[in-house]
Image 1 (cartoon, one colour):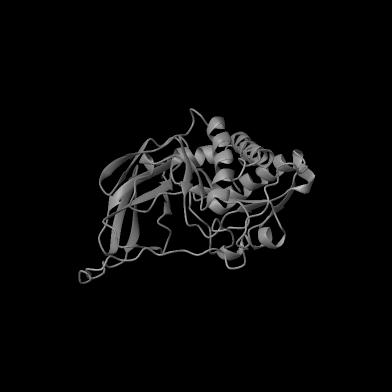
Image 2 (tube, rainbow, N blue to C red; image 1 turned 45 degrees about the vertical axis):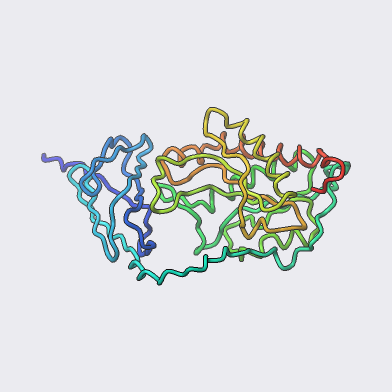
Length: 313
């Protein structure tokens, strides 16, 4: 009896089918092959495969359609990567381009809420926002094709459980795979007089950056009241993940969900989903529970710590 040779199936998670990349000279590609495969060849270069079967590499591209050949064993797979045409150079403008100034959420009040220190947890409302959601807004994608929106929701649920166990009132902007308008996500925190708003995310590199060289946690804020909350969350998360993944601390960002002068708000990036190592870590439920509890502990610390005298947070 003749035994047919083992055929190695190759999947490509990024770029997604039909996706058109911005005008770049290189992009990362990621995907998966069956476990046990040690190497594949992408665009003529050997690529190491992680123990989970996930892989990621950089490829050179030009404007238009690019045919990328992936070889795994005796199987060859051709993938089309589409890249936008580079725009024609604009005339040099002697006047420096003005930086775009983002404004606050239109429905948020201008004055910050009174800090909740001194209140019982049962009188404090925290709104937890699992980023992305719905068929069109998947967020980033892992080598095996798992969507960030699902990872965000699972981690957000752990944060909610931990906060609830501490006695806090907690609401989520979504608890299923539904789409939400980005600028509407914090509305419930403003209209419901919440004490804090925390958006949960998992990070990804730009398409022309090598995911293998970038991995860290970070917490983003827009204003001083958000920065105080972000600092407490970042400190607890960094301590929990020390020796596992580095922390970039608190960073400033004009994100739609953080531009809130009324409700202290921050956005948490807990890991990079675009590498096999990050993918593996994110789907470890024990680690996810630890991170959720650390984020909750940071929120709890912020709630119990009054701002310095004469300073409003």
